[in-house]
Length: 163
Image: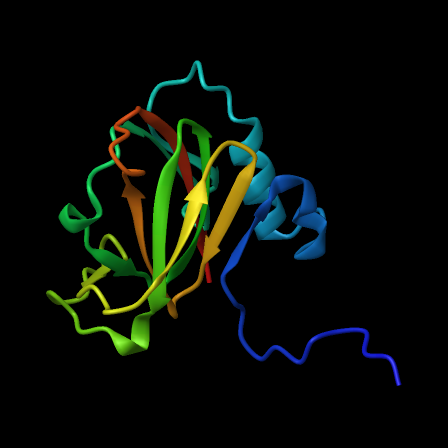
């Protein structure tokens, strides 16, 4: 017996190369639109928010110096999922299960974010140009973390996709 699909009841975090996008979604899907928009965004444009499909799909374009992980909190979202693509530079993302973490404060509905305590154990990914990460509500994540002693600037596009 050959299985042709996975019995996944809810979406799971994705970390992969952009060239593998079609493994997860099809052209026209919101996730596909988010990744292709971020990957082709004209970096000559200034930082800020750019609506792709109103508030259902928009981009947050950011330039910053990654911080030491200890200066960053884990976060999770409820109304949107994140599609994150680093276009310039490198940064580390730490990930864990949101249900296992305690809130640091109340859920901020206007910004769709809840800040969470750091877990004892977590997984880390390295975000570099050509990679993308997708974080769903159950995926607590700590982005914008410095890699070792490196403090090179990062230019990132965080796509917000309404659930």
